[in-house]
Amino acid sequence: MFKYLIISIISLNTLLSQQCLGGELRTIDSYIFGRFEVRMKPAFGDGYVSSFFTYHDFWESFYGNWATFINEIDIEFTGNLENSVQFTTHHPGPWSLTEIQDTPFNPFDEYHDYAFEWTPDYVKWFINDIEVYSQEGMNVIDLIYPQKIMMNIWAAIYGDWVGEWNIDTMPVYSYYDHVKYYYFTEGEGNYGTNNNFTLEWEENFNSYNQNRWQEATHGFDGNLCHFSPVNVFIHSGKLVLQATSTDYLLGDVSNDGIINVVDIIELVNIILSFSEPINTSDVNQDNYINIIDVVSIVEIILSD
Image 1 (cartoon, rainbow, N blue to C red):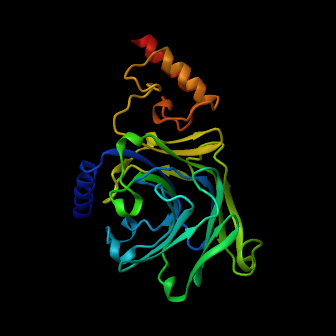
Image 2 (image 1 turned 180 degrees about the vertical axis):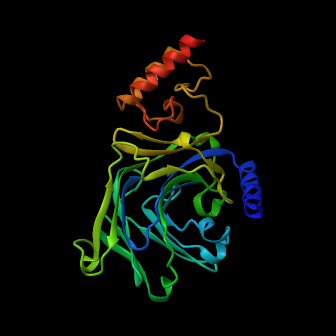
Image 3 (image 1 turned 45 degrees about the vertical axis):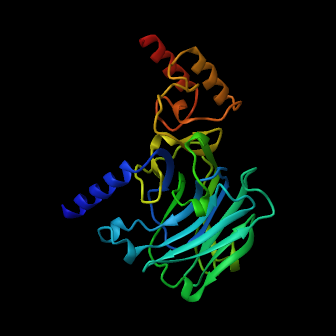
């Protein structure tokens, strides 16, 4: 009972401090070691963080003793820095080790492939299948806990890290084309460093796999956004995560405060990929934006 009281107090305090909605998708299962790949295009703009990472869900380990059980491996993009990506590991203590890696391209302009390999001996990061950074030995020896694969977008309070956030820049989007997980088969696989890895599954986001993924519904200190399932959906074979204001009306695609035929036209443009999807587009909340949402808007209009 005490555990859940503490969690509730932390969640309430965090929620009261948050000013926007973000999106996070995570695997239901946790993984120990492997190669983790993503093809993505992050969100541009001061204050925003777009990510692909693995994270040990420490609440499952010991009632929220974060300092003892923290394990995390990050690929992060801060929207204020063009031509760079940030690689980090987080360790019990806690302590962390970060590298800001220059890129020969602007990651916000188009999709690129990013990956990291996690083994008992090293963590290596890759951009477009080229190794660019690694941590070894004592820097990885305490990365021993199973971790979930996660992707999210949020706004940070740390202006010196991500730039000063402005709510008027919303909405912003982070796009994910596919995710791959290879399990660790040292020297016996067919991919990665020394053929140490074997493909276990690939997610192309042609549909929403409820047996693999779940949306987050939490926030955390330093995050101005509260994660909401409303900001997680599949569109045109892509996972779309977005950061938006907390004020929204499902079906108000034109964002003018009313639901009418204009919203139908806007939604059709989104379905045909003429416009960016927004969280009010997924009217029936099934994680897809399609003709069923058009029907839902028509039903709302007729019911009024």
